[in-house]
Length: 140
Image (cartoon, rainbow, N blue to C red; front, side, top):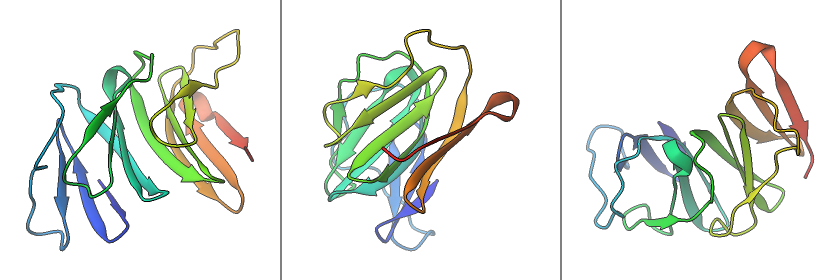
């Protein structure tokens, strides 16, 4: 669950939304997806949630969602917004997007086998944490 732009968003197969944390509603429009959702953020007037099998959903109002193509099958655990971009992390994957629609892999060519579980943007940098004490930082 996250609280962004005045809304609570709870993740399951659908992004449930609440303004008060007590009363929850399903999206009015949700793309056909059976993938679990795990993390979300808000930036550039866009809600972005991520989940298993490279799933990325976007919405301008948190009620009507659009499935975006990522060309990734990795489980995405979390997404953050900062420095004019979205960055999503998960199982051996880092994806970035300037608009929430077009996603690009930022993984090194040797594709190390580690899992990132969380990412935030703070003090001018992205900080991602993962398995075995892994911490990655980036200012871009």
